[in-house]
Image (cartoon, rainbow, N blue to C red; front, side):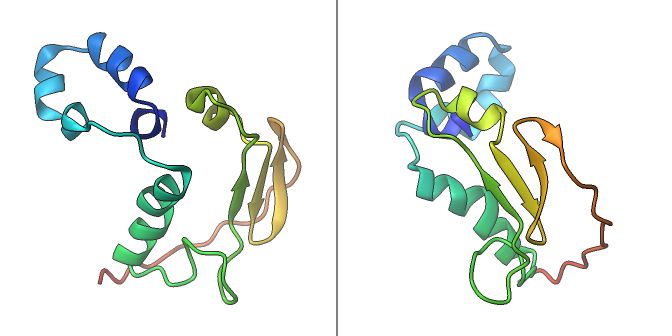
Length: 113
C-alpha cells in the first residue's frame, strides 16, 4: 500500500532492490501517489469484482462485512503495518495485534468477469 500511496517510500524501496527487478516492475514508472480511496479500489473492490466475488470488496447491504480499520498516519507504511481492528463477517477477529476470535473459514469460488 505504501508503495502506491507514498512516492518517497517507493523511491527509497526501489533504490534498495536489484536493477533488473526495477526494470520489470510497473511501479517504477508510477509518478503519482494513490489516494486512500484509490488504494481501497485497486486492492479490494477491483480484485473482488474481477474474480466475481459479489459479496466481497464493498460495504453495501449483502456484503460479507470483512472490514479492516487503520489509524490515520502520514506514514503509510506504519499505518498499514498494524490494523486497529479487523472484522470477518462482521465479527471482531483482531484488535491492535491481538487475536480476539477465530471464525471458521469458507471456500470461495471465483467466477471471473
